[in-house]
Image 1 (cartoon, rainbow, N blue to C red):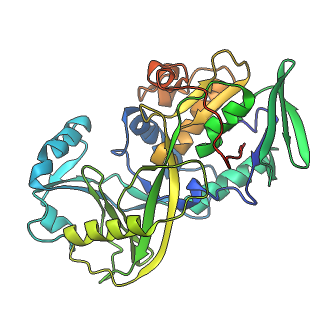
Image 2 (tube, rainbow, N blue to C red):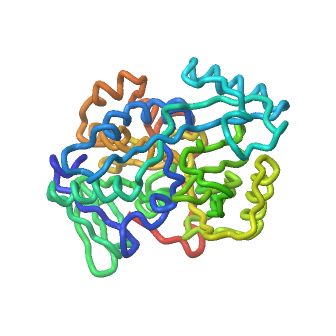
Length: 364
């Protein structure tokens, strides 16, 4: 979003972009999922997903899926809270009739989000990279930031084998964003990376038309994935920034929760992985210039919602970097610069400058 209007160099510490959280997403577009600001950004992303720019992708980025939020009898208050928060956007449905694997008697009630769709994350990511390069953007891989310091009216950035001077730094380092801020001498925002585990297992029948099933308190989810099923215990284990790996106990916990709720016997784990979802205290993204650090722009804390809200958050961040108002359609959804600002009370109250952990490495 910035490359057509500014000279942009994107630094990626890995050998290829999208190695970490982007490549490990559950890949669902769900306007009902996340805190208010995320839901607003997700709604504002709908137009891009439905009609991307010409040539952006060779096929639709979204395909229908639907999301079923299920609740046991003791979870009815949580279901009602979700229903109220969505303002009637979700429909009450018979849980037993809505998912063929749900165990009889497990769920007392359910809500259905018909707007939820699968996202082709690879196509979306590739489309953005192609557009970035076409607009003159420069990508440097294997460029883990080692030096980031104020330099006159800008910033000096160096990595093994290279360096640049930039007027503005956009800190989009994911789980490493606080580490990068510490390297720059900028107060952190209290970012906490949290590990989430997923596994692929066989399905007892063709799941192509099944909805994604989500525990209303997000203790598990089950989603069709290329003829098989993706399951997760929806864990949120605090972790240092790292190449997260699935742990046996978390996989086992996910299998147990799924087998309790669904008539599914998991005999084999086809594939397992983990990714880091990074949050600040109020679980809302941070997008804005750091107070007292001219030219240092935060773009972090997307949590588990980064893909579904990417089109709108990218446009919002670009506008803020350029000193412009938020785009009208994003503002119309209730998003404000103050709600995203690193200076908002919910962030600044929890933030502190922390030393880098042993083994931490900056990413830019």
